[in-house]
Length: 483
Image (cartoon, rainbow, N blue to C red):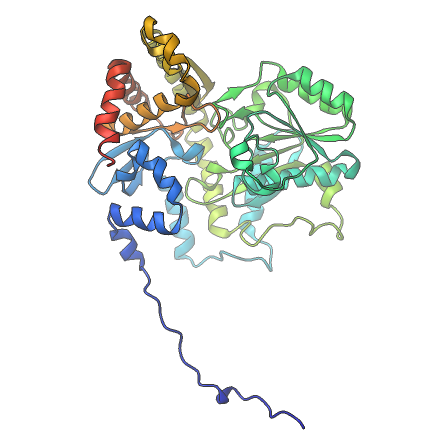
């Protein structure tokens, strides 16, 4: 017996009930308490805990311009955080905003996977023109993790299974997606995830450790390192390290992947931080500010020879081709305009000049406040300010006793300083993942001498209070206020 044919009309069709949704205008009008509750309920309640410790949960940004966030209640907050190097062009750079508006007004295509994109092609050509040596094959993505995944995959594909092991460094940060998480040296971030096993770790900047590893293990085919470690506390390798690394890689047939996601795009005064040493890696990666501080954009740039070895034939071309949102139109034109702004407005030169000035002024503060400030380091506008352990700030009679608590209290002084800079001086700074005693300064590359002086004067005034008053002021103004 045959079943009767199904007809759509046999089922009563009803429109789905419309859930209660926020409109764009609704979102704009939300108050800080509602935002905090929605963030807690639907995004990350644990993160709110840390925002409360710093007093950052009281801030609701209404808009941003240049070097400043402007809050709902009209405060102008000087941004020396810079979104972990993402805000290189400042907030809402007028040229980049204008390019994006023109793109929208002309109804240009955004997602165009079925055809070749003139915007992705032009951006790739620009990146190839900027990059030294034969770094000229470009993969476009959206994030630093995606760019680094692409970098490691092209290297491994070119090397083949026999030389697939990856050498990476202590205190490294390359991203949180599972591939690059395997070479991100953090027990916290790696958690209980099952990671890539073909990896080996050496101390960052230790060329002898690299030499011994490459000589003892021929299966190592890839070395991946940040040129300047951001999460590690703004740490650079010793002078000459990168030249020796390049020579070792050449000798052993190893590919060098330089992670420039944070330190690239002019932040150190040169487009790539590795350029200072006159060497060229086999693969590099950029992200953060690449989208003109307005769009999510990341890129891997590889030497043509190895890229073609990995993906150069029709049967291998699609192994790691651009994903859906790789090379989106508006993101590409934001990056194109940003690269032109970088050169035409001399932002790299400005990063060098203001960075030199800022480091000199910070070293003056270190001499003025030796019990609080331990070391100033960095290049351009990527600067680490390391504070002493709490015990070192105490009177002689208390140092030994408090030293027992230094490990547990590590990072607390940075937290007090960061919270009070925001609360009392409207200045925002960043912290680091591994060395919790370090505040990192990564302001937009448009920073002026006046901006640097504003920051230095605020920090000087705060440190002049001394450790006792810094702690009590934090407890009184921030900790108690958070409830």
